[in-house]
Length: 306
Image 1: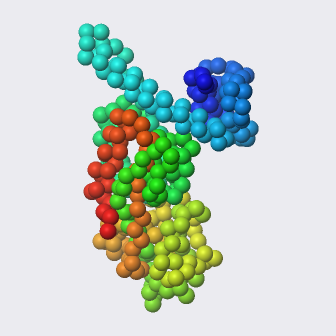
Image 2: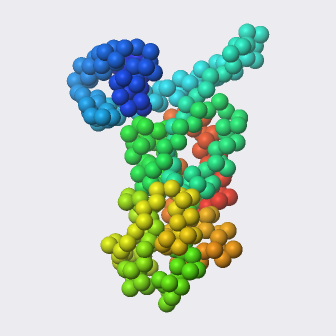
Image 3: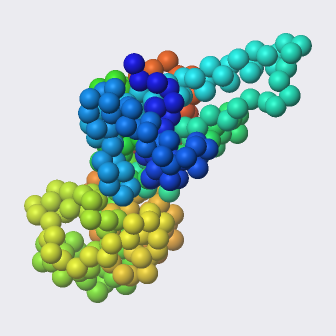
């Protein structure tokens, strides 16, 4: 059996990005951290970390990390419940309830549009220390699978083993640009010939929404055309507004700019991207509360299934 202190140490090394920082967090020596990791590897018969900078969990290490974080979440909820019970009795704890850490992974466009409206009411009523990890909607699921987060918003439908998934809705993207940019590069409308020459704005090199959209509308995406990589959802829109290029913008961000005429739609065809809420399949009141809040806000902000 793996000792709790060993699981705590593994989690600290991964979250802090090294043995020295993990030692400071746990208030022990760096050699004690190394010793605990060695003892864990001796107990499992396998390495649990890669000796890289920063250290990464191996396959067995990821399994242990998932287990450690699930146990931590449930223990924190149990502690909070005990505090509430004590607070309602004559032996109330003057220190109040503990804060519960909760790590979630979301895509940048969700963070820039509707996520805050969903989670802020939960944060106002729960003692949660929220840790948001931002990645592409195709990759957030890996963070959940690796045990780095307790829940995520993903474009993938099938949940990892030990998790559950619920449909949230479709985030719809428009192929948009400024009127001046459209006049210069797409005077005859969106075409493959024009797309080979016109500069585009894309989120990053892992973002496939742009290429998927052009392949859907034009039959192929001119991947070698000039591109600006802007890995920030709000600044992304600023670059498109500033005529640096054209790009795929979520409806929630594009709508007010369409209304003022500062953006134009290059095509009547939109790109719907399905979003799902994934979380560990454990009896966690906190995860259930967060999932309920996300689903309620998604019904207001996203498009339902066709």
